[in-house]
Image (cartoon, rainbow, N blue to C red; front, side, top):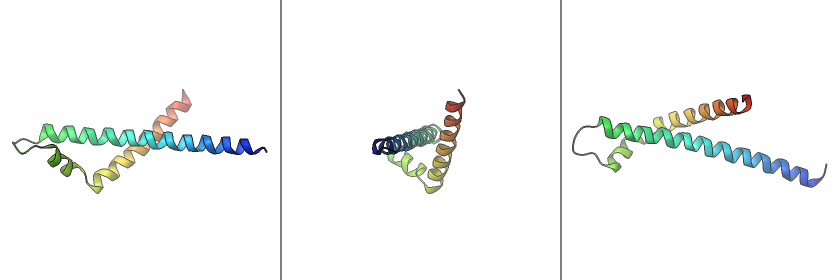
Length: 84
């Protein structure tokens, strides 16, 4: 097998991995933006600031939920992408 085919396979793998990371990161971004909007709409009172809201939503539990949702979303979209 020629060496350029090996490079082409590696390139496709890297591109696929990069696409997966970008899609999962976008889903995580949407998750956190949704949490941030909910924090501002449900918190009543005068002390609402962006820093306060970010401190309130950034936690290991929320990050774990975001990553799991990102992976599920990525698998779901890949399934639909291959089906259609």
